[in-house]
Length: 197
Image 1 (tube, one colour):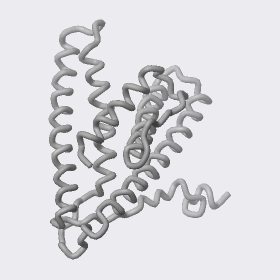
Image 2 (cartoon, one colour; image 1 turned 180 degrees about the vertical axis):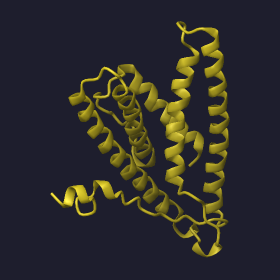
Image 3 (tube, one colour; image 1 turned 90 degrees about the horizontal axis):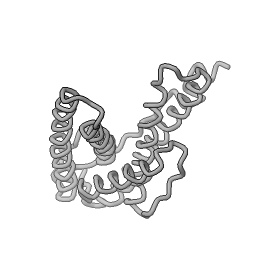
Image 4 (cartoon, helix red, strand yellow; image 1 turned 135 degrees about the vertical axis):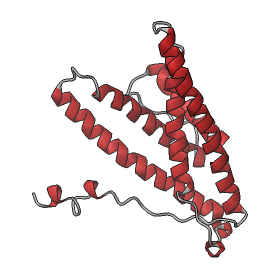
């Protein structure tokens, strides 16, 4: 498992989505196993990215905006659930190599690093889209090129950090620990607005 594999899958998802560029287009996942989980997770992120664009239309009908907001809320929960499935996969992948006695832990699990890589892939794609615009002036292009350069540096650094984390857990230099997100606002027994009704 490498950052390159993850990023290649994320790029495939983003390119596939933009063929239709439709938030209602049905995902057709060509993979199984961990690759399938990564594809599905990236699809959720990609659709949500575009829903976030749509909802920012200042002229959006308020009823439509509420429908989209609810859809974004569900997407956020789906995203978290998918990250947890990816962490389950890593937990099984590391197996006995996950030495809890080694004393070193990472600030986030492998799947949450993957989550950051997935969002970064979307930022890179859309910033490159801005660089390539033919209707923008040179000042705009220069500004977004600088931002793209930062994103590409971040991609290199985050990819290296992810690869090092995987190697460290495999070699017993770090251990993996998983905490569930426990989002209270989606739980009818924990959100006062929901349980007091």
